[in-house]
Image (tube, rainbow, N blue to C red):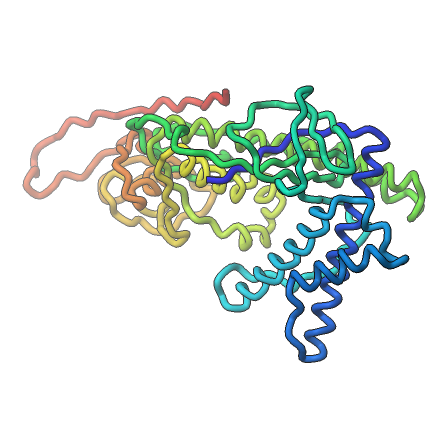
Length: 409
Protein backbone atom coordinates (compact mmCIF):
# COMPACT_ATOMS: atom_id res chain seq x y z
CA UNK A 1 0.00 0.00 0.00
CA UNK A 2 1.03 3.62 -0.39
CA UNK A 3 1.78 5.70 2.69
CA UNK A 4 2.60 9.35 3.20
CA UNK A 5 5.43 10.48 5.49
CA UNK A 6 5.71 14.16 6.45
CA UNK A 7 8.82 15.91 7.76
CA UNK A 8 9.36 19.48 8.88
CA UNK A 9 11.35 21.74 6.55
CA UNK A 10 13.42 24.78 7.54
CA UNK A 11 14.06 26.80 4.34
CA UNK A 12 16.28 29.87 4.35
CA UNK A 13 14.99 33.32 3.41
CA UNK A 14 16.03 32.88 -0.24
CA UNK A 15 14.49 29.41 -0.39
CA UNK A 16 11.22 30.74 1.04
CA UNK A 17 11.13 33.29 -1.80
CA UNK A 18 11.77 30.53 -4.36
CA UNK A 19 9.00 28.41 -2.84
CA UNK A 20 6.64 31.41 -2.92
CA UNK A 21 7.35 31.73 -6.67
CA UNK A 22 6.62 28.04 -7.17
CA UNK A 23 3.35 28.32 -5.22
CA UNK A 24 2.30 31.37 -7.22
CA UNK A 25 3.17 29.92 -10.64
CA UNK A 26 1.34 26.67 -9.87
CA UNK A 27 -1.71 28.66 -8.79
CA UNK A 28 -1.68 30.78 -11.97
CA UNK A 29 -1.44 27.74 -14.25
CA UNK A 30 -4.26 26.04 -12.34
CA UNK A 31 -6.51 29.10 -12.65
CA UNK A 32 -5.66 29.57 -16.35
CA UNK A 33 -6.57 25.95 -17.08
CA UNK A 34 -9.80 26.23 -15.10
CA UNK A 35 -10.70 29.41 -16.97
CA UNK A 36 -10.05 27.74 -20.34
CA UNK A 37 -12.25 24.77 -19.50
CA UNK A 38 -15.04 26.93 -18.11
CA UNK A 39 -14.95 29.04 -21.28
CA UNK A 40 -15.20 25.89 -23.42
CA UNK A 41 -18.14 24.65 -21.35
CA UNK A 42 -20.02 27.94 -21.65
CA UNK A 43 -19.55 27.86 -25.43
CA UNK A 44 -20.71 24.27 -25.71
CA UNK A 45 -17.30 22.96 -26.81
CA UNK A 46 -15.42 19.89 -25.64
CA UNK A 47 -13.10 20.26 -22.67
CA UNK A 48 -9.50 20.97 -23.74
CA UNK A 49 -7.21 18.01 -23.07
CA UNK A 50 -4.43 18.21 -20.53
CA UNK A 51 -1.75 17.90 -23.21
CA UNK A 52 -3.18 20.83 -25.17
CA UNK A 53 -3.45 22.93 -22.01
CA UNK A 54 0.15 22.10 -21.08
CA UNK A 55 1.40 23.29 -24.47
CA UNK A 56 -0.76 26.40 -24.48
CA UNK A 57 -0.50 27.51 -20.82
CA UNK A 58 3.05 26.39 -20.01
CA UNK A 59 5.26 25.88 -23.06
CA UNK A 60 3.85 28.65 -25.25
CA UNK A 61 3.04 30.97 -22.35
CA UNK A 62 6.70 31.10 -21.30
CA UNK A 63 7.48 32.81 -24.62
CA UNK A 64 5.08 35.67 -23.93
CA UNK A 65 5.99 38.79 -21.89
CA UNK A 66 3.00 38.32 -19.57
CA UNK A 67 3.95 34.79 -18.53
CA UNK A 68 7.73 34.73 -19.00
CA UNK A 69 8.23 34.31 -15.25
CA UNK A 70 6.80 30.79 -15.45
CA UNK A 71 10.27 29.71 -16.55
CA UNK A 72 11.68 30.58 -13.13
CA UNK A 73 10.21 27.45 -11.55
CA UNK A 74 10.39 23.75 -12.39
CA UNK A 75 8.10 22.72 -15.27
CA UNK A 76 7.11 19.58 -13.33
CA UNK A 77 5.42 21.73 -10.68
CA UNK A 78 3.28 23.40 -13.36
CA UNK A 79 2.37 20.10 -15.02
CA UNK A 80 1.35 18.62 -11.67
CA UNK A 81 -0.92 21.61 -11.15
CA UNK A 82 -2.79 20.65 -14.33
CA UNK A 83 -3.10 17.08 -13.04
CA UNK A 84 -4.56 18.41 -9.81
CA UNK A 85 -7.24 20.16 -11.86
CA UNK A 86 -7.96 16.90 -13.71
CA UNK A 87 -8.39 15.13 -10.37
CA UNK A 88 -10.75 17.87 -9.15
CA UNK A 89 -12.95 17.51 -12.24
CA UNK A 90 -12.85 13.72 -12.00
CA UNK A 91 -13.99 13.79 -8.38
CA UNK A 92 -16.75 16.25 -9.26
CA UNK A 93 -18.11 14.11 -12.09
CA UNK A 94 -17.86 10.93 -10.01
CA UNK A 95 -19.88 12.65 -7.28
CA UNK A 96 -22.57 13.56 -9.80
CA UNK A 97 -22.75 9.89 -10.81
CA UNK A 98 -22.99 8.77 -7.20
CA UNK A 99 -19.63 6.99 -7.20
CA UNK A 100 -18.30 9.02 -4.25
CA UNK A 101 -19.54 11.52 -1.65
CA UNK A 102 -20.77 14.82 -3.04
CA UNK A 103 -18.13 17.46 -3.79
CA UNK A 104 -18.41 20.83 -5.47
CA UNK A 105 -17.09 21.92 -8.85
CA UNK A 106 -13.44 23.07 -9.05
CA UNK A 107 -12.93 26.66 -7.92
CA UNK A 108 -10.26 29.25 -8.57
CA UNK A 109 -7.35 29.42 -6.16
CA UNK A 110 -6.62 32.69 -4.39
CA UNK A 111 -3.22 34.18 -3.64
CA UNK A 112 -4.61 34.90 -0.17
CA UNK A 113 -5.03 31.20 0.59
CA UNK A 114 -3.08 30.42 3.75
CA UNK A 115 -2.21 26.88 2.66
CA UNK A 116 -0.03 26.34 -0.41
CA UNK A 117 1.44 23.17 -1.95
CA UNK A 118 3.52 22.07 -4.95
CA UNK A 119 4.44 18.54 -5.99
CA UNK A 120 7.66 17.17 -7.49
CA UNK A 121 7.71 13.79 -9.24
CA UNK A 122 10.72 11.70 -10.25
CA UNK A 123 10.88 13.61 -13.56
CA UNK A 124 11.92 16.71 -11.60
CA UNK A 125 15.08 14.88 -10.50
CA UNK A 126 14.79 15.89 -6.89
CA UNK A 127 17.01 14.01 -4.47
CA UNK A 128 18.19 13.62 -0.89
CA UNK A 129 21.80 14.74 -0.61
CA UNK A 130 24.54 12.88 1.31
CA UNK A 131 24.17 15.59 3.94
CA UNK A 132 20.51 14.55 4.42
CA UNK A 133 19.08 17.67 2.81
CA UNK A 134 16.23 17.77 0.30
CA UNK A 135 17.44 19.07 -3.07
CA UNK A 136 14.66 20.57 -5.20
CA UNK A 137 15.14 22.00 -8.72
CA UNK A 138 15.40 25.81 -8.84
CA UNK A 139 14.92 25.98 -5.07
CA UNK A 140 18.07 24.49 -3.55
CA UNK A 141 18.99 22.20 -0.66
CA UNK A 142 16.44 22.46 2.14
CA UNK A 143 17.14 21.47 5.73
CA UNK A 144 14.89 18.59 6.84
CA UNK A 145 14.12 17.38 10.36
CA UNK A 146 14.20 13.60 9.82
CA UNK A 147 12.13 12.09 12.63
CA UNK A 148 12.19 8.54 11.19
CA UNK A 149 13.55 6.48 8.33
CA UNK A 150 11.62 6.08 5.10
CA UNK A 151 10.70 2.40 4.51
CA UNK A 152 11.42 2.63 0.77
CA UNK A 153 12.47 5.06 -1.94
CA UNK A 154 9.76 7.71 -2.31
CA UNK A 155 8.14 8.32 -5.68
CA UNK A 156 6.99 11.91 -5.16
CA UNK A 157 7.51 14.74 -2.71
CA UNK A 158 5.02 17.50 -1.96
CA UNK A 159 6.16 20.71 -0.31
CA UNK A 160 3.41 22.21 1.84
CA UNK A 161 3.18 25.55 3.60
CA UNK A 162 0.39 25.43 6.18
CA UNK A 163 -1.70 28.23 7.69
CA UNK A 164 0.74 28.62 10.56
CA UNK A 165 3.61 29.41 8.17
CA UNK A 166 5.34 26.06 8.66
CA UNK A 167 6.88 24.09 5.78
CA UNK A 168 6.63 20.33 5.38
CA UNK A 169 7.96 17.76 2.90
CA UNK A 170 5.44 14.98 2.29
CA UNK A 171 6.81 11.79 0.69
CA UNK A 172 4.75 8.99 -0.91
CA UNK A 173 6.31 5.55 -0.36
CA UNK A 174 5.33 1.95 -1.09
CA UNK A 175 5.19 -0.62 1.70
CA UNK A 176 5.32 -4.37 1.19
CA UNK A 177 4.23 -7.51 3.09
CA UNK A 178 7.30 -7.35 5.32
CA UNK A 179 5.32 -5.17 7.75
CA UNK A 180 2.70 -7.86 8.46
CA UNK A 181 2.61 -8.52 12.20
CA UNK A 182 2.47 -12.04 13.68
CA UNK A 183 -1.01 -13.26 14.56
CA UNK A 184 -2.31 -12.66 18.07
CA UNK A 185 -5.38 -13.75 20.02
CA UNK A 186 -7.37 -10.73 21.30
CA UNK A 187 -10.27 -9.36 19.27
CA UNK A 188 -11.67 -6.00 20.31
CA UNK A 189 -14.87 -4.07 19.98
CA UNK A 190 -14.57 -0.30 20.45
CA UNK A 191 -17.33 2.05 21.58
CA UNK A 192 -16.42 5.68 20.90
CA UNK A 193 -17.88 8.41 23.07
CA UNK A 194 -17.41 11.80 24.71
CA UNK A 195 -17.17 10.98 28.41
CA UNK A 196 -14.50 8.42 27.54
CA UNK A 197 -12.88 8.66 24.13
CA UNK A 198 -12.94 4.87 23.68
CA UNK A 199 -14.30 1.99 25.71
CA UNK A 200 -12.94 -1.45 24.81
CA UNK A 201 -14.77 -4.75 25.01
CA UNK A 202 -12.18 -6.11 27.48
CA UNK A 203 -13.22 -3.50 30.06
CA UNK A 204 -10.55 -0.85 29.51
CA UNK A 205 -11.54 2.78 29.20
CA UNK A 206 -9.51 5.54 27.52
CA UNK A 207 -10.16 9.02 28.85
CA UNK A 208 -10.90 11.80 26.37
CA UNK A 209 -7.98 14.30 26.30
CA UNK A 210 -10.23 17.19 25.15
CA UNK A 211 -7.39 19.12 23.57
CA UNK A 212 -9.60 21.92 22.25
CA UNK A 213 -11.33 22.47 25.58
CA UNK A 214 -8.01 22.68 27.40
CA UNK A 215 -6.64 25.23 24.92
CA UNK A 216 -9.84 27.27 24.72
CA UNK A 217 -8.65 30.10 26.95
CA UNK A 218 -5.47 30.62 24.91
CA UNK A 219 -7.39 30.41 21.63
CA UNK A 220 -9.96 32.99 22.76
CA UNK A 221 -7.25 35.46 23.70
CA UNK A 222 -5.47 35.02 20.36
CA UNK A 223 -8.75 35.45 18.48
CA UNK A 224 -9.59 38.62 20.42
CA UNK A 225 -6.20 40.09 19.60
CA UNK A 226 -6.78 39.32 15.91
CA UNK A 227 -10.21 40.96 15.87
CA UNK A 228 -8.73 44.23 17.14
CA UNK A 229 -6.15 44.59 14.38
CA UNK A 230 -6.71 46.78 11.32
CA UNK A 231 -7.56 44.74 8.24
CA UNK A 232 -4.72 44.56 5.76
CA UNK A 233 -2.06 45.59 8.28
CA UNK A 234 1.14 43.71 9.10
CA UNK A 235 0.09 43.39 12.72
CA UNK A 236 -3.12 41.67 11.65
CA UNK A 237 -1.17 39.15 9.60
CA UNK A 238 1.09 38.45 12.59
CA UNK A 239 -1.97 37.98 14.80
CA UNK A 240 -3.52 35.64 12.22
CA UNK A 241 -0.39 33.49 12.28
CA UNK A 242 -0.52 33.35 16.08
CA UNK A 243 -4.13 32.11 15.91
CA UNK A 244 -3.18 29.55 13.26
CA UNK A 245 -0.26 28.30 15.35
CA UNK A 246 -2.49 27.92 18.39
CA UNK A 247 -4.93 25.81 16.39
CA UNK A 248 -2.04 23.85 14.86
CA UNK A 249 -0.79 22.89 18.32
CA UNK A 250 -4.22 21.53 19.20
CA UNK A 251 -4.51 19.61 15.93
CA UNK A 252 -0.99 18.18 16.27
CA UNK A 253 -1.63 16.98 19.83
CA UNK A 254 -4.91 15.34 18.81
CA UNK A 255 -3.28 13.65 15.82
CA UNK A 256 -0.43 12.36 17.98
CA UNK A 257 -2.94 10.90 20.47
CA UNK A 258 -4.89 9.20 17.67
CA UNK A 259 -1.72 7.71 16.16
CA UNK A 260 -0.42 6.35 19.46
CA UNK A 261 -3.74 4.81 20.50
CA UNK A 262 -4.59 3.33 17.08
CA UNK A 263 -1.11 1.80 16.71
CA UNK A 264 -1.29 0.27 20.19
CA UNK A 265 -4.73 -1.26 19.58
CA UNK A 266 -3.79 -2.65 16.16
CA UNK A 267 -0.57 -4.20 17.50
CA UNK A 268 -2.36 -5.80 20.45
CA UNK A 269 -5.43 -7.14 18.61
CA UNK A 270 -5.97 -9.49 15.71
CA UNK A 271 -9.32 -7.91 14.82
CA UNK A 272 -10.93 -4.57 15.65
CA UNK A 273 -14.57 -3.56 15.26
CA UNK A 274 -16.05 -0.06 15.50
CA UNK A 275 -19.46 1.47 14.94
CA UNK A 276 -20.14 3.71 11.95
CA UNK A 277 -21.08 6.93 13.71
CA UNK A 278 -23.14 9.72 12.13
CA UNK A 279 -20.56 12.41 12.86
CA UNK A 280 -22.16 15.00 10.56
CA UNK A 281 -25.47 14.64 12.35
CA UNK A 282 -23.90 14.83 15.81
CA UNK A 283 -21.94 17.91 14.72
CA UNK A 284 -25.25 19.77 14.27
CA UNK A 285 -26.28 19.30 17.90
CA UNK A 286 -25.34 21.16 21.08
CA UNK A 287 -22.45 18.69 21.43
CA UNK A 288 -20.85 19.88 18.20
CA UNK A 289 -17.67 21.31 19.76
CA UNK A 290 -17.04 18.16 21.81
CA UNK A 291 -17.69 15.94 18.78
CA UNK A 292 -15.19 17.83 16.64
CA UNK A 293 -12.71 17.89 19.52
CA UNK A 294 -12.83 14.09 19.78
CA UNK A 295 -12.00 13.55 16.10
CA UNK A 296 -13.65 10.12 15.77
CA UNK A 297 -13.49 10.01 11.98
CA UNK A 298 -9.73 10.59 11.87
CA UNK A 299 -9.18 7.92 14.52
CA UNK A 300 -11.32 5.32 12.70
CA UNK A 301 -9.52 6.09 9.43
CA UNK A 302 -6.18 5.45 11.16
CA UNK A 303 -7.45 2.14 12.53
CA UNK A 304 -8.61 1.09 9.07
CA UNK A 305 -5.40 1.78 7.16
CA UNK A 306 -3.15 0.45 9.93
CA UNK A 307 -5.14 -2.77 10.04
CA UNK A 308 -4.58 -3.15 6.30
CA UNK A 309 -0.90 -2.28 6.68
CA UNK A 310 -0.15 -4.73 9.48
CA UNK A 311 -2.38 -7.60 8.35
CA UNK A 312 -5.16 -7.17 10.90
CA UNK A 313 -8.93 -7.39 10.47
CA UNK A 314 -10.99 -4.21 10.61
CA UNK A 315 -14.82 -4.32 10.71
CA UNK A 316 -17.21 -1.37 10.67
CA UNK A 317 -20.77 -2.19 11.77
CA UNK A 318 -23.89 -0.23 10.87
CA UNK A 319 -24.81 2.85 12.87
CA UNK A 320 -28.35 1.56 13.51
CA UNK A 321 -27.18 -1.52 15.42
CA UNK A 322 -28.80 -1.27 18.93
CA UNK A 323 -25.55 -1.83 20.81
CA UNK A 324 -26.66 0.17 23.86
CA UNK A 325 -30.05 -1.54 24.12
CA UNK A 326 -29.08 -5.22 23.94
CA UNK A 327 -27.82 -7.18 26.94
CA UNK A 328 -24.45 -8.68 26.05
CA UNK A 329 -25.04 -11.53 28.52
CA UNK A 330 -28.33 -12.93 27.23
CA UNK A 331 -28.95 -10.99 24.00
CA UNK A 332 -32.35 -9.58 24.99
CA UNK A 333 -33.18 -6.09 23.71
CA UNK A 334 -34.16 -3.96 26.69
CA UNK A 335 -35.12 -0.77 24.83
CA UNK A 336 -33.57 2.71 24.53
CA UNK A 337 -32.26 4.53 27.59
CA UNK A 338 -31.47 8.21 28.23
CA UNK A 339 -27.83 9.29 28.19
CA UNK A 340 -27.63 9.85 31.94
CA UNK A 341 -28.19 6.12 32.55
CA UNK A 342 -24.66 4.70 32.67
CA UNK A 343 -25.45 1.40 34.44
CA UNK A 344 -28.59 -0.64 33.88
CA UNK A 345 -30.03 -3.99 34.90
CA UNK A 346 -31.25 -6.47 32.30
CA UNK A 347 -34.88 -7.33 32.93
CA UNK A 348 -34.47 -10.83 31.48
CA UNK A 349 -31.34 -12.23 33.15
CA UNK A 350 -30.72 -9.69 35.90
CA UNK A 351 -27.21 -8.79 34.80
CA UNK A 352 -26.05 -5.34 35.91
CA UNK A 353 -24.29 -3.82 32.90
CA UNK A 354 -22.01 -0.88 32.31
CA UNK A 355 -23.58 0.94 29.39
CA UNK A 356 -20.31 1.67 27.50
CA UNK A 357 -18.57 -1.67 28.06
CA UNK A 358 -21.77 -3.51 27.15
CA UNK A 359 -21.96 -1.49 23.90
CA UNK A 360 -18.33 -2.32 23.08
CA UNK A 361 -18.99 -6.04 23.56
CA UNK A 362 -22.07 -5.81 21.35
CA UNK A 363 -20.05 -3.98 18.68
CA UNK A 364 -17.62 -6.90 18.60
CA UNK A 365 -20.42 -9.47 18.51
CA UNK A 366 -22.23 -7.63 15.72
CA UNK A 367 -18.99 -7.72 13.72
CA UNK A 368 -18.77 -11.48 14.17
CA UNK A 369 -15.71 -11.40 16.43
CA UNK A 370 -15.21 -14.16 18.98
CA UNK A 371 -15.02 -11.98 22.10
CA UNK A 372 -16.10 -12.75 25.60
CA UNK A 373 -18.31 -10.46 27.60
CA UNK A 374 -15.59 -10.01 30.22
CA UNK A 375 -15.87 -6.54 31.64
CA UNK A 376 -19.39 -5.88 30.40
CA UNK A 377 -21.06 -7.11 33.57
CA UNK A 378 -20.62 -4.86 36.60
CA UNK A 379 -22.68 -6.94 39.00
CA UNK A 380 -25.42 -9.53 39.06
CA UNK A 381 -28.74 -8.94 40.72
CA UNK A 382 -31.25 -11.51 41.96
CA UNK A 383 -32.64 -13.62 39.12
CA UNK A 384 -36.25 -14.82 39.43
CA UNK A 385 -36.39 -18.60 39.79
CA UNK A 386 -37.45 -20.50 36.71
CA UNK A 387 -40.55 -22.65 36.87
CA UNK A 388 -38.54 -25.84 37.10
CA UNK A 389 -36.60 -24.45 40.07
CA UNK A 390 -39.54 -23.30 42.15
CA UNK A 391 -38.94 -23.80 45.86
CA UNK A 392 -35.16 -23.66 45.58
CA UNK A 393 -32.85 -20.83 46.63
CA UNK A 394 -30.02 -20.65 44.09
CA UNK A 395 -26.82 -19.10 45.40
CA UNK A 396 -25.94 -15.77 43.88
CA UNK A 397 -22.27 -15.02 43.24
CA UNK A 398 -21.78 -11.28 42.70
CA UNK A 399 -18.96 -10.51 40.33
CA UNK A 400 -16.95 -7.37 40.07
CA UNK A 401 -14.84 -6.09 37.26
CA UNK A 402 -11.66 -4.15 37.80
CA UNK A 403 -11.48 -1.45 35.09
CA UNK A 404 -7.96 -0.44 34.20
CA UNK A 405 -6.75 2.50 32.19
CA UNK A 406 -4.72 2.17 29.03
CA UNK A 407 -1.13 3.29 28.80
CA UNK A 408 -0.12 5.21 25.67
CA UNK A 409 3.44 4.26 24.79
